[in-house]
Image 1 (cartoon, rainbow, N blue to C red):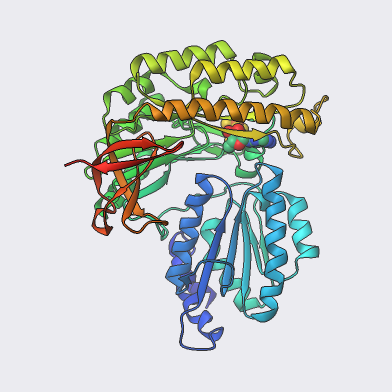
Image 2 (cartoon, rainbow, N blue to C red):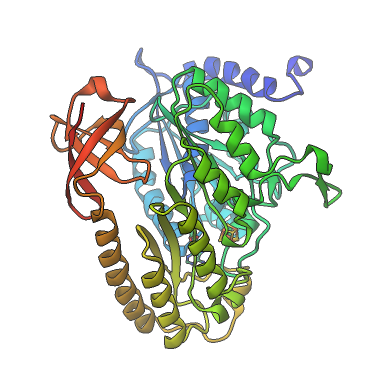
Length: 482
Ligand code: 5AD
Ligand code: SF4
């Protein structure tokens, strides 16, 4: 029998999806389909990975349900800040009691947190009811892992230290039929000193442009209008395709495709009407990219540009490789070419050694740039990162005070910035019926501003002009224009 199992991917996984289809019949106690729930923590990259997990589970024959009371529950975890870890253990306590009622229930854990050996150790010893554990480098293997779990009757733990192969062309379930994330690269080589991502997601690797374009053409033909190109640092797209014996394999200069070139090609794809991307590292954002954004109407009028801190000294300790002045001059160049662009950011408060003066530099950048939105984070010590062993960790009360001051400032500024569109008509991609008021639909402008307005189901997936009537902080009430 062994000889019949395909060696090549993704054929091997399709083989195991079929096998699982047969095996899960044994778990069923009635005629109803088995149910699954994928609980996602963290960033867009994880959300996109979850769509792939859902695609595999639906191919096997599971049906999605809300909540955690399902036949198969999988947690796609995040470890970028410590509170994400704590949340997972809370959920697992709850699942322990659910599994007592449902002995055939399967519980799987995957994602960034599983790449940390001490987490896997805790799961092994304290959470014995977990059936499958895997990491960020083998999510494509879900069907094979389920098969092994069911066939062998033992729990399966498979966490790899790096991506040995990249497997594409697996099923994917999209929450919305008209918009989708697309990975353009995996991993990160920047090693910002506070960040655990390079350790849990591995080294930076770009997907070949032809594969990305083929995927986007395919989803566009199925009705996708908006794509979000995903990578930890999209501006360094196309530099590294692979590693051999630990050494970087760079493509020959003449075959290189840069990020601005990739964007231009994506914009040419028929059916694609909006193109977004994230995340941009300020150190790699080129003038060429700014020029492409100004030239291509399909590229959304929005850029997420994490500053992290406004103090040059802290930025250096963070290993960000730009100064306060370089960041501000980059913003100036962006605004000169795209006067009305929406700029959003990430900021960390309380990095080791941050003084009041350093913090005031951050406040200064916040005021000078005028962010449309800023995601603010309290510094979280991640074991294994250089910052975790730095002297001068900041006391909690000092951090809280700075955090609150920063939050007030960013909220005030963002309220004013978002409010500038009052009375303006904007194209809105309608996403869904409003959860609170069924007579309204909810969608987003290219600046990523949420708009609610009167309309019905037939508008879902359409891009329609809407007059933004009243600003309610981070969202608008609007009226459809004809
Ligand atoms: N502590 C706090 N925030 C962090 N981020 C990444 N690592 C940490 C950490 N250790 C934030 C950064 C990043 C965002 C995704 O999460 O601001 O841009
Ligand atoms: Fe983390 Fe920095 Fe890489 Fe972003 S660029 S994932 S903050 S190391």
